[in-house]
Length: 94
Picture (spheres, rainbow, N blue to C red):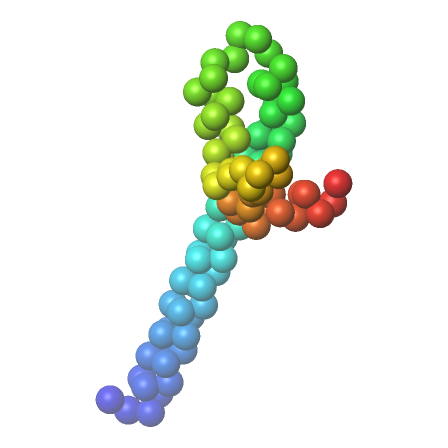
């Protein structure tokens, strides 16, 4: 393989790597948007679900568990930790 062919191969390899990285970033952006959309949906409907008498107990439990999966009572104090980072950020904004 001569020098020119070697240079072309190196450039093509770099191009493939850059295109793969671009695709990976694009997929990450899509996942972020879907996650953010889910969080906004949950937060905006949570009060309605809990106040709606027609909402079933399993729905309410699922909603609660998706935000704070490890609720515990310490005497009369409710102890919890948020499941995911976004919910912690939302709590800090309120």
